[in-house]
Length: 208
Length: 126
Image (cartoon, rainbow over all chains, first blue to last red; front, side):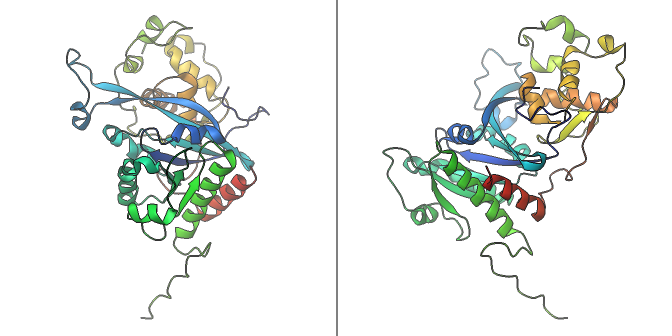
């Protein structure tokens, strides 16, 4: 079926997971997804909302009520017919109405930061914080980009101390794998009652 | 829905507004929004000789893709149809009992710690 899954009879995903890849325009989202998986186009035809109407020039096409949004998605087949889907979120603010759909039931998110334009990822950070979706920040180390310390980025983005900030090269599969591993570890560590990772054990419930 | 066959050439991309393929419907018939990674599969109903008449070419393409489990995102990408359109067409096939959604996590529910550990091990083994 051309979907990259193994061709041994009635195979296919038995469990699917999704991770959002967010970040400003040109931060390297597509590069990151393609470093670790086959990238495939995904189209949505979104009904224009009043929020986006102001942004799309509708002069002459006043009857147009939907707009096409293209995004990337990648698929990583893990063992046991578990499949991890990466969705590159459309960066522009006018597509925010799509994010609810994308983040629904997501495992977590990676905010890809370009330190030359750090402000571009404020919106993603805000969104995931408000939404309560666990995320990590990955600083894409472009050639020639000024190197910032992860701690500096953490401070600049006003992130909580628990939010991991890692350096990565979005072109390198091993580097991207490291980012995803960091995210899943962070999600596990953030789960209530989980002792995974460095999270301190929750305080004993008060005796009544 | 019948109009789909007249407007879309087998070998070309759709030349009509995407929601024309759904008869103008933008909401799934059952009102349920399938998750992008909901896994669907052909329910294994015997082929109906009337399928050529009752199903649009897009319905039939989707049905074919669902012979093996696939997610909504897979089907949308493989057909080149927008996600919203595939949602509507899939809902038709589900209502007709031709396609079923594999039981999984409840919609919107986050994976369990056990599943996350499996993902972690799988990622590390890549």
